[in-house]
Length: 119
Image 1 (tube, rainbow, N blue to C red):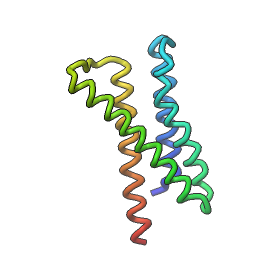
Image 2 (image 1 turned 90 degrees about the horizontal axis):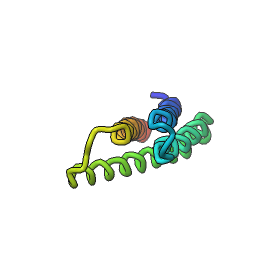
Image 3 (image 1 turned 135 degrees about the vertical axis):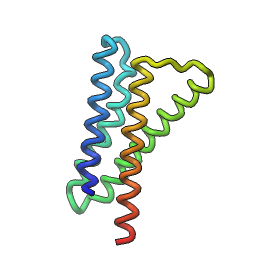
Image 4 (image 1 turned 180 degrees about the vertical axis):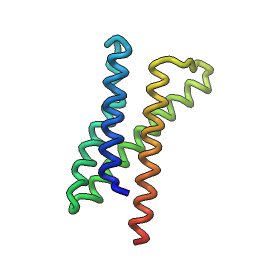
């Protein structure tokens, strides 16, 4: 599993999600860029990890931002569900998409770290 490539894909997906949400929302709210704010450091640290001597550093930075992105979106969704204020709209769809992208990326990283540790 080429983890720097997975990080680049996850980072680009978050950036596209953020920019797409902003454009689809009529350019009204800059909070639509939040996925991109997490995607940029994931992308940059994954690019850093393409250097074999920086692989560990880059991927640990990337997974940290992925985990923070997942926890932030999870907290937001749980709060809305608990308060019964959840409605499916563009903002919540983008939040769910960001949560899933970050979760899948973190799971891939953890699996890769376990394999690397055993090897």
